[in-house]
Image (cartoon, rainbow, N blue to C red; front, side, top):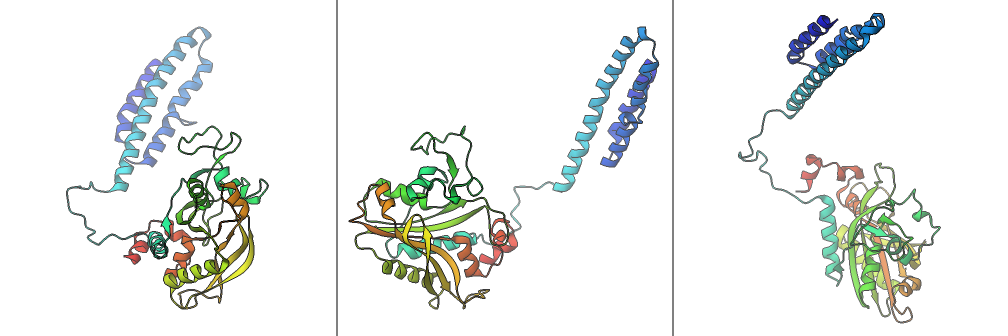
Amino acid sequence: MESQLSALLAKAQAEFPTLATRPDFEAAKARYVGPNGEFTALMKQMGSVPKEQRPAIGKLINEAKGKLQPLLDAALARLEQAELAAQLGPAVDPTLPSPDIGPGTFHPLTLVREEMCSILRKVGFVVADGPEVETEYYCFDALNTPADHPARDAQDTFYLPDTVRFGNVSKKTAEEKYLLRTHTSSVQIRTMLKGQPPIRIVSPGRVYRRDTSDATHSANFHQLECLYVDKNVTVRDLKALLDYIFASLLGKDTKTRFRPHYFGYTEPSFEVDLSAKHLPKVNKEWIEIGGCGMVDPTVFDAVGYDSTVWSGYAFGMGIERLAMLLYGIDDIRYFYQNDARFLKQFA
C-alpha cells in the first residue's frame, strides 16, 4: 500500500498544477477523494489489513492525506485567482487620463435638500444637525411618544444591542436603549435643550425604519423637518410658510391644504396635502406630502420652555417624495442604485 500511496501522490502532484478550469478541478478532486475516488478506495482497504499492521498503514494514509490536501487547496486558489482576473479584465494604468470627461453632478436628493435649505434660509431658518444614532429620550420620550406607542415597537424601529456604547451620545437613564433615529425631530429636541427661544431651524438628514423596500418605501430614507418657536406663533404662520416653500420649490401653481391628524409631538396636528397637477406623473388632484402642527405644550415642558409664553410649529416631509414629484421619478429605489445612467440626468 505504501507504493500505491506514493504513486497516487506523484500522480496528483503532476496533474493538479495543469488544471485550467473549475470543472476540471472538480472532476479531478472526485477521482482522488470522491466517494469512488482512488484515495478513498485505498482508505477502504484498511478493513482488510491485519490488525498488527493497521497503525503503520493508518500513519501512511494520514501522511498521504496531509500531502494531498495542500495540492487541492493550491489548485483551487490558483483557479479562483484566474477567475477573478478574468472578471476584472486587463490591468488599468492609473496614470492615464480618465475616459469619462463629463462633468460631475450632485445626487438628486442632494439637489432637493440644498434647494429646500436655500428656500428656508431666505426666511430666517438655519440648518441644524444631530447624530443618526439616538436614544429613546431624544427620539421618543421628549417628543411626547408614549411607551406603548406602535412606533416604538421593534418591528418599526432599529434598536441597537445593549452591549454597544456610543461616547458622543449619552443616555438620560440607564434603562433606555440606543437606536437608529426614526425621524429628525430628535434634532429639534437637542436644539431646544441648548438654549431659549426664538428658534428657527431646518434639520435635514437620514433616518431609518423597519420597512420592506418597494417602489415607494425604503428602510432608510431622508427627511427634512422645521421648527419655529417664538411668541404668538399661529397655525396661519405655519400655513403661510408651507405655501411659500412649495410654491418656491414646485411652482407657483402649487396649492396646499391641511387635514386633521394626530401626532404626539404637535397639537393640533395636520396632514399636509398639495395639489401640483402641472408636475410630471402627478395623477391626483391632492397628494399627501408630510405632517405638521403646533408644538404640544408637553414638549415645551420637557425642554424647560414656558408654554404660556412661547408657542411654535413644526413640520416634516420626505426628501425622496419631493424629488420624485419634482423630477417625475416613479420608483424610490432608483435613488440608491448608483446607476450612472440615472444620475447623469441631473447634471
